[in-house]
Amino acid sequence: MDFTAEPFYLSFKLAFITTLLLFILSIPLIYFIYFYSGKGRPVWKAIVSLPLVLPPTVLGYYLLILFNPEGWVGRMSDQLFGLRLVFSFPGLVIGSLIFSLPFMINPILSALENLPHTYREAAYTLGKSHWNTLQHVLLPNIKPSILVGLVMTFAHTIGEFGVILMIGGNIPGETRVASIAIYNEVEMLHYENANRYALVLLLFSFAVLIIVYLYQNRRSQGVI
Image (tube, rainbow, N blue to C red):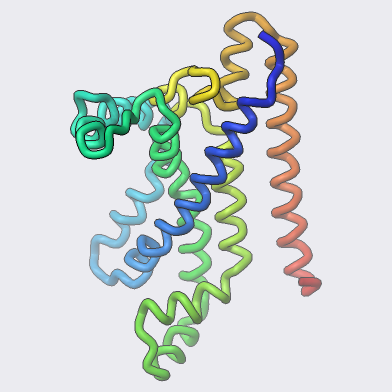
């Protein structure tokens, strides 16, 4: 098989959609966890962070059980929307949303928790609600952490393998992203192509980290 850019296109497409949707969906979840004062708060934080410590194949296995046509999620998706989740790009998106969730939420939530309480107190004295306080006072003061969450979510989705292989398989033009293409080329003993795919991902990952650290360094020096 010849080296092709199609897996990279699918990888970047998946990463872009995942990052965009996660940013939108994570804000209400961040709001809930940040302002939640009950004893169950550590439990919610543990649930969000679970994909960080859970082996990708374990998470992928349970998603495969849920997404297959016999599972309740897969059956409901098929009946209501005519959408098959296993071995399809939409299934990859949903799996990536779950697996990359902590990479979006944790940097933002950590930054919020480290902000001085005076920010919230000042907003409350002005009659701001919790939601308005988060939207107009707190989030604008943690822009670097939001950027880190966006960048790390995008980069993590680009490099994901285990979950994608379990629920998406290796379908050209549909689920064969760059990480799966490397696995596929190695399986067929096409090491030259595997090296090309791997090198591109290596350079991309390194560039992402350089950009993040340069931004943080410049910000700490007051340049930006």
